Image 1 (tube, rainbow, N blue to C red):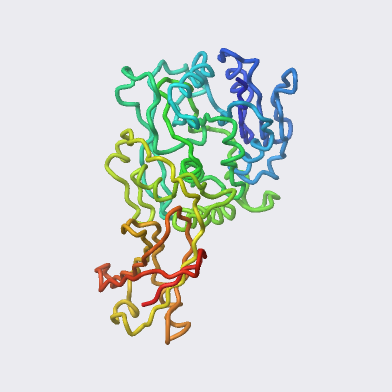
Image 2: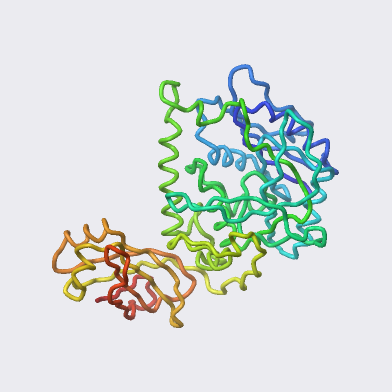
Length: 419
């Protein structure tokens, strides 16, 4: 069972010790293959060479680096059909026989497509290694101003009585173990910078049919602070001869993540067609539109198993709603907070929600006083049958609600509704 170990390293003196510890504490070190994106400064030592081409390195001068997710995508490009994929950072310590433990946990999961991931316990490279065997979990932390979910970690409840891994709602970027096919099915988006990496990855993996788990055994330690070491956002600033300052990449990345979380799309760096975006929200206990998280998600409780994958393939729908302004009360047009815009199946289950904000409403109202045309795009494996528009006033109070049936032409995915 070969394992491809992906490590994106940015000017990190812990890279070589991490590789050495990874090999020395593995039960089967000869089965490890490394893919390293080595983003380096002048005179910084390269990764060690391994016999048989087991160390594949993309060397990048630090000024040419484009951020963490771009570097992880470079690592994935070095994958060569190994049985399993392990993504790490360049600052880790490992439990003894960590590789055998991960393989055992993958088998115990009972899933054909398991992903084992967590926020690992912390260590300090300049201090004694903490004595711990407690496995960890991830739980909801908070929403950023852009509506992106960030996480906290904690000790797995009742871990002493567990043998099989615990179902997870979220994924970690620094400790992720999956079948090798993950590289092809859920490739990293090189346009993302940093924030939003993990929540988008969790959604994409889930919708591609992967089952998410936290290992029920301690696997590794992770160094979170990186005190005294160069970081991408320290180097990539104005006046240092870089293509773009880090904040410019970050702004574009945050906008892309925000769009993904509110208008999810299928595609190479989008959702899969095995499960829906809505199913992920139900499974994880998260609403990205409402920016809410369930008490269970906040506590880090184990979620119920997801329902069976949809039998029908997901389709991309385009819906065009034509609204006659005279049907709406004045507050809905002149001083709204937002309009709820939702689409539902024949049973009334919400398939997609894409609200109109104050600026969009003003723009649509001013473009044509005779009618307002709202167009929405979303992916669903169920037929959208009904639309709903439910305005609010400036204080967020609900105004009269409108809904109706959607019409389509034959087998087309172009749908229409009118108010």
